[in-house]
Figure 1 (cartoon, helix red, strand yellow):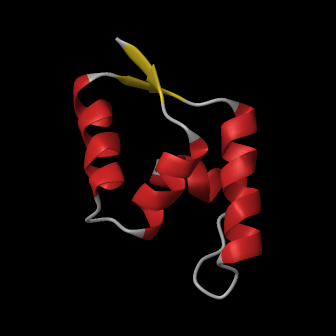
Figure 2 (cartoon, rainbow, N blue to C red):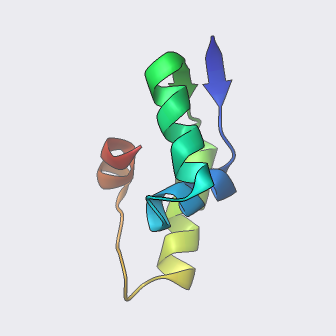
Length: 67
């Protein structure tokens, strides 16, 4: 099954790797096909740049690798 995950869930999963959103993303990745749009990736990057600039910088290629 193909599953698209909201940008907020991805952001929570990346920022808190032991969280429930991270477990959900991991489950989807292991059991289904994770589908991401360019819009979702850009939204994630924008939010990280704005809210967490001192914690993590994710360019498009780095964000794609993490997810």
